[in-house]
Length: 129
Image 1 (cartoon, helix red, strand yellow):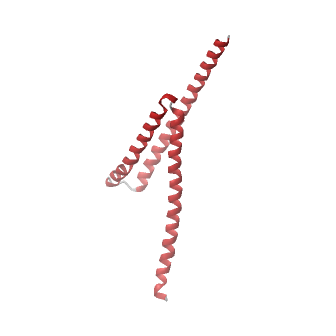
Image 2: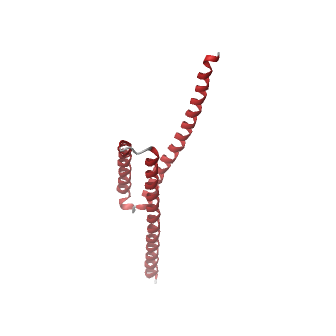
Image 3: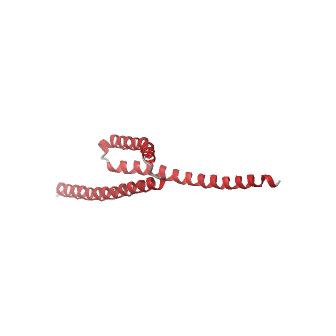
């Protein structure tokens, strides 16, 4: 029985690693799918109704191109002797840059909505008077 002790300990360790990996995979999948849903929501409110279908289609096209290029860029960086930490750090910087751009776009959209609302209120007031 002693000769198999290392085997059972190894199985326990592997099972714990697999459980951790599965939990992280589920968590990452939730964030990835959530970002796709968020992309659709942002695209929906970003385009005027007349071009909304084309705008959303183009948004998804750009996202798909990014999804195709990402593994190639990762492989290229690994071939240039980047370690995983450097690649993840650069991805985090890109994510922060995109988040900053989204905040800028959100402020711009709010200002445009306020201007449009003011114009429509002025137009309604002029037509009523």
